[in-house]
Image (cartoon, rainbow, N blue to C red):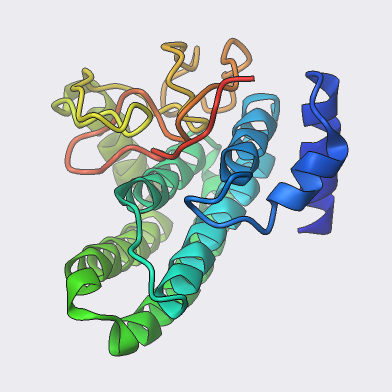
Length: 245
């Protein structure tokens, strides 16, 4: 995580930001003043990372952050914003897209990482549900179900890589539009490859699932990570509150 923060600071400073601000923002929670900077640093890092394997690692790290944020908010007795849930859902989806774009040996290896990391998130979510107020139980239940599905999808992909790849590609081409989490207003977007940075700028990755990492045309943008477009039955990987640099 220290390497992640250092990279985010370097990138943010490159775009004219303050390294001290970025560093301080990494511990911020949703609703706090520096949280948009935290989200923007994540978006920037993903948008400028060319390696699909590194993108996937960062995406899982950011998903872990969302679970930690949910835990922190619940512990403080605060409501969890919908954008946090949407962003986590989107990051889980993007991890599968990135894995599906790799060759078979890499895909199986990376899906093992997805499975292990998601299993840990599932256990954490189970613990959170045990002490959460009734008002947050529906949101936690949705995330618990999504995490369990993620584990199953990763396992299926390891057992049958080609079927998994075909399924992910088919979803990107035929899925109906989902609410655009980057705008936070429920706007519908057509189906397609998710944008992991969820920048709300309208720029889409130049490569489809099966070819992740082609997001060099993206710009880090506002209102949290997540694709502008999404596959069928899965929410977009983002939806936060970042601000455009």
